[in-house]
Image (cartoon, rainbow, N blue to C red):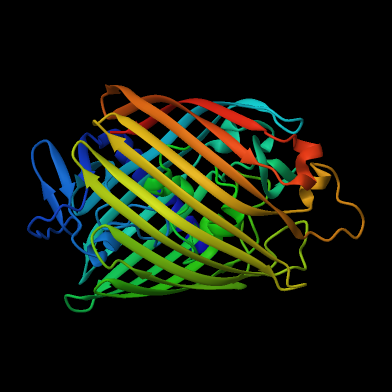
Amino acid sequence: MRTIRNIVLVFLVSVGWSVGQDAHQHMDMSAHAESNQTTQKMPDMRMSDQMMRMKSHSLLELLQQHATSGTDAEPNSTPFEMLMTTKRDWTLMFHGEGFLADIQQSSPRGGDKLFSTNWVMPMAQRKLGNGTLTIRAMLSFEPATISKRRYPELFQQGETAFGLPIVDGQHPHNFFMELAAMYDYKIGEQTLLSVYAAPVGDPALGPPAYPHRASAAEDPIAPLGHHLQDSTHVADDVITLGVTYRNTRLEASGFHGREPGEDRWDVDQGTIDSWSTRVTVNPAQNWSFQYSIGQLHSPEALFPSEDIRRMTASLMYNLPIRDGNWASMILWGRNQSLADGNVGNGYLLESTLQFLHRNFAWTRIENVDRTNELLIGENPLPLGFTERYFTRVQAYTVGYDREVGHIPHLSAAIGGQIMLYGVPDVLKPIYDSHPLGGVVFLKLRPH
């Protein structure tokens, strides 16, 4: 696995450099039906003097595009934008997103901070035999742009900073979010066999992670249910096998279950000690459903003897509209401790509307279980402490941004959002009855 890691890393550094030097064409990926055209560059790509357009008419075509992390899927009609160029038999692509955000929160537990959440994705594809080879990296500079290993977020939990539990804060992503190689082999017109190998990557567990799904694309803040729903999108030593027939996909993954360590610049490694399986169905152009279940071995550094069983289910809907797009998702995630049977659930509804080309409005509503770590805060855990889900919190977000200009191949937007919270009685002495937060930001995206 270490040899694979080194080969993939060296290759993707060179791909990223090539894309940065040569990406001068714009790709708009959507799923409006047009005639299928296959080239030796990528499946279903149209090329003109000005741009390339990738069209998705089915789940099989969508999966071969690999426009999101891991082997995740969204509705076929979901639009994506990338920079693209070609070199010999390779198609090179680049996309990403960056927010420069300032957050202000009320409540005795609230904080304020200027920080940046961000990621970039260089990718290379080529035809190989009767299939498509894809090499991809996902990189984030958050270890440098989020100081003190966290940014403030009321009621958020998960991972550690300086050996203490992160409470009321969100950790940065690792610099290497994904280093992956994929091969999709067509067995007839309606069947696809896929292999995914990643020293760092996203196993088949949960929906597309929040930084990479259209329904959350304008929101710079992590969902409170992240560690109940999609936190394994940065896992180590991932192997996934998948088979797709028509509009249905079955997958199974093996991976290392421990969450990333506090050194966010390195590539962790470990034995393949955890598993997951997922079924995805795209019954129509605008719909996508997934159900997944997995077992995570020792995911948390503070509780190394505890294994977790996770289940998730999500339904995504995407509607292309005139001069815009509307993407929505409902999501359920559940963690069960295999040590004591304690169960936590997280429910999410989020929706993002693009209208009149340059305008975006969104909302996120959550109802999530929280553990008794909230009572302790970011302090050393008492001797013999057992973490348990014990109460539930609601979070309500509304936001808006507007694109304000187009630097060549770069879109900029200015926006903001407000977060309101429903606080249970047991937490009101700590958080007050009606805490709230606000974020203003500048967003940059390849265009």
